[in-house]
Length: 477
Image (tube, rainbow, N blue to C red; front, side, top):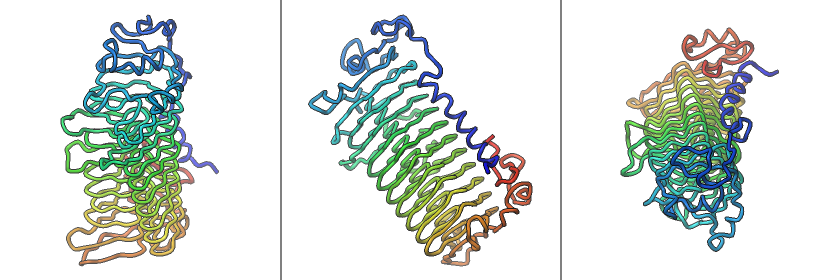
């Protein structure tokens, strides 16, 4: 039976994808006369038309194609010949770290096909190596084949104080990460945020990828490392994301190194990618810290790993936050496996739920695998089947309590029948006299339909009951 909540999710996805689909011609763009070269009549005054891969390669290399120029793609571009360029190294990324692209690039409804780049020992590898104070609009790349070291992306290697809107990448992006930097590998962008001497806000809006992304650390379906002053919104990913550590369907790492007043954000975004790794593997973000936020987002991903594996995030520390989000996929691994988060120590999960099937070895929970530190879990429920070998709980696998920093659990619920677990917390480790609070086990009838109104959830502003189904978040309408 298709439930109402399932329909709500699909409707929200349709609206989010509407603008992305239009990039492939469902909504046409008038480009008549656009094939006439750099001065086509359909482009803004002062802008430079791009009609071939040779002209694209000239950006930043010829006087008539400056790095701060305004460019408009005026017809579809076939870049397959780039595989033989530069002794097999392929297309040379536009700009560099020292000389970033600072202008405007508008895809104008056209597609760039078959960009080939093979530079496994090089940092900042993408169509555009580095951007600063730039604007990229509706740039669509199809069938890319890109290989670099670190800071590798389909569209941009390093993004700083720039706006990327309605862009799309399809193909393969691989980062060897042979150096010590490990600044990220992403389907769209390798690294997005504010490094030294770059303080503006970076925005990724209404963009998507359908890619195979491979790397070692900080590997993401959209962004490898989403850092300070960077916001991802209304974006989506599909395909395969593969790495070792900090691997996520949207962002491999959603984090800054230290404290900041402008932590990275992922909001109103979703993924149904297949995400796999070893440690810190999540449907949306592999690793999250320092106030980083996930809000009003969801994952339908198949997520697998060894340790610290979660439906939304693999590991959260240092006040990382998840709000008003949910997981509805499948999660599997060895130790510290959770429907929402694998491990959380010093962070918060509020107004969220997991319907994901969760399978693991030790410390397995319907919502969270392992909890410790100054952590808050509030207005959260789990309802997917949960199974494992040792310490398996319908809500939490392992809860570490102490006198000074025990987690706080309030308004936590699990479906005893659907999860297959009679214990909400499988094991409690006490290093003092702390007491976190306990989740409440309910039957399916008690947690669905109008009966759910008896749960201590904010049904006025945040939650809604659903006939014959579990509570949903109001934003899902």
